[in-house]
Amino acid sequence: MTERPIRCYLIAHQGPQDRTDQIMDHLAELAELARACGMESVGKHQLKRATVESRSYYGRGQVEAVAAEARRNEAEFLICDDELSGSQVRNIEKITGLRCMDRTGLILSIFEQRAKSREAKAQVELARCEYELPRLKGAWTHLERQVGGVGVRGGPGETQIEVDRRMIRARIGQLKKELVHLEQVRETQRQGRLPDIPRVALVGYTNAGKTCLLRALTGEGEPADMLFATLDTTTRKAWLGQDEETGEPRQALVSDTVGFIRKLPHQLVAAFRSTLGEVRTAEALLVVADAANPEVEDHLKVVGETLRAIGCGEHPRLLVLNQVDRLTRPQRIDMKRLHPDAVQTCALSKSGLEDVRTWILDLVPGPPKPRELEAWEIG
Ligand SMILES: Nc1nc2c(ncn2[C@@H]2O[C@H](COP(=O)(O)OP(=O)(O)OP(=O)(O)O)[C@@H](O)[C@H]2O)c(=O)[nH]1
Ligand SMILES: [Mg+2]
Image 1 (cartoon, rainbow, N blue to C red):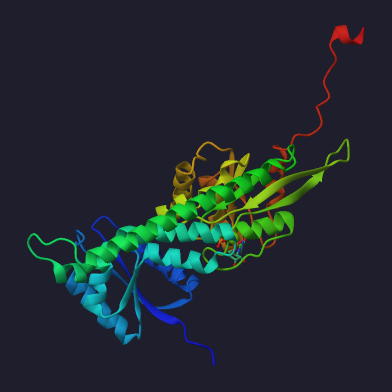
Image 2 (image 1 turned 90 degrees about the vertical axis):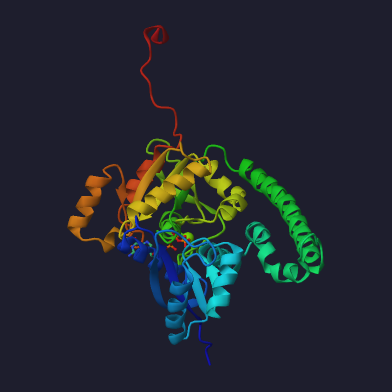
């Protein structure tokens, strides 16, 4: 008998400035994140509110109403698209009797499930520790209150928090040390690569088709219809053809990388510093986007911001508008008007790939170009 996936109900805050269709798209993305975490979403709702409420973020009344709906659909979890504090999560759990998780917690759980390499595991654990550290306090307030009183300090609650904090800080120290070591190994590997082969990195929003493009260019990579299918950087050689004169093969190294997402937890960006180092040290970037996603322009903004945040704002880049097979002809023409310098591709049928190869070829140092001899050389 197959086990039924855990059911969850999704909610998001909608402020006076937020468009309803945009919040619905964010909730659809949250449902995909839940699916990537092995959960099934059974409903979603946007909670309108001018300002957030400090105790329960969305306000007690709205939370209660939504929890009743969630329970009717047999949901065990409430998943919130907004970043909540530890005490807000606990207050919502107390009000609803359901378990509650915020967006950052959900993304961290996906990364925890996916991490395979030692480096990815250490990076994700570091991000988890950084996420939990400021959230510890609230977990013990019930104990603090037990011993609390005017002028009373210490007590079992506070001591336990201190012990937990110390342990997490010690673990953070260990993990950082391990990651520095792994980064050195990566750096040595990088220096061992052939110097005259340029390296391009595939970057972009998660599920855009980066791994599919790696496969189309190099013959390797396992694409999956799943957010954050790729966590580890993979670098493979792409054959770009032969040099017309010398017959030498012309090639480039192509790196597939972890995808970006709106509100990517900053703990993860910091923890993935060395993996993302592969992007920083690449000569050029192929910025991949799912052209058929209604939010594609917002995705591109997120990618631009993330690239700037990791110090790659200036890298030469080619915009690859992928999945254009899912667009109508007029939509493709509109895209061309909006992004005239971009290449439109379908990674599945490999259409448009020749343009990508031609662009990469410009980075490959070929044999010296024939030059006209000057008079003094001819004699
Ligand atoms: N129709 C269509 N589907 C595509 C195309 N490129 C990729 N896909 C599909 O999109 C899904 C995601 O592709 P991936 O290559 O895994 O995407 P990714 O950017 O590597 O995603 P993450 O590693 O999860 O960040 C897969 O189901 C692919 O089959 C395309 O050009 N057209
Ligand atoms: Mg991938």
